[in-house]
Length: 314
Ligand SMILES: NC(=O)c1cnc(N)c2cc(Br)sc12
Image 1 (tube, rainbow, N blue to C red):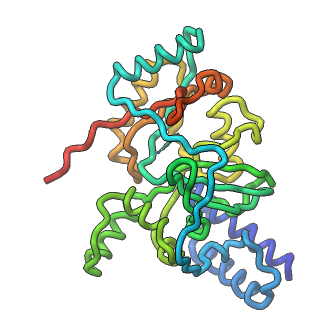
Image 2 (image 1 turned 90 degrees about the horizontal axis):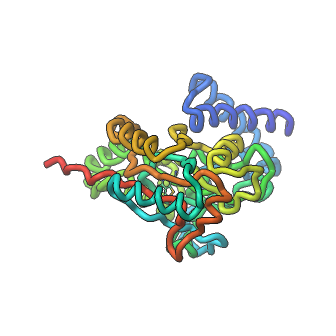
Image 3 (image 1 turned 60 degrees about the vertical axis):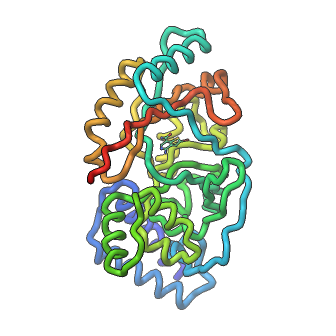
């Protein structure tokens, strides 16, 4: 029986990964539903065989009375914002001067307009999900994070690692949620970011599970756990571990190429199924990042170019 149970868990996990992480469903919903129903039935008969990484354990039906505070051993820093080309060029000049080089490789990424998230794994098992909080103390929202289908409950490797990123609500989920709140006479959320934050701060996990949240993961608290020397290699490594990584990142070798990427996504951002509020520009090489270091509040090797505030439609 436990053999069939493990087979079902692997099959369901593979289908769920394809659907929620690769955004490429490989089977009809009814096939998934039948496998899931069989797993639920076997676990109901053999509760001793239920494991924390079973797909049935995502919505625990837990109602907390509060969120406990948890420390971030490695502070979750924010980043400096820039608003125009001149400031981007100043960043590039400072970086090349401090590194003593003519040319620097940058990783450019979409800045997801969501809520910063920390995911701690021990031997590959998800043991804690937390908010950024003030950067050194966050809130333990593990029960809610487990309900996000793109968050792996178990990594493909038994690593002990802290992976960070953004939880967000897709635009379509936001529109559906506000439409239902309108019908129910409830206050509407102002934007998907507030809706995602409000959903993850729900004490009732069933509510969080109903909000169709998603994640894009883009950092590791201690990259020495992985055999990587650059940010782009790290992104590929956490994608291989089963994390949802945004595919639009690029490695570029000039600030001109950074500008071109910004121009491209300034035009295309409204067509994305999720909100972005800027472009993140990072020195790609980890040794160079260490050489540049950080101020008390922000790293000196990355900046966020923020899009101009959108005209509010009247
Ligand atoms: N890809 C990234 O690095 C990224 C994307 N979206 C965000 N909201 C943030 C925030 C920080 Br801090 S980094 C980052």
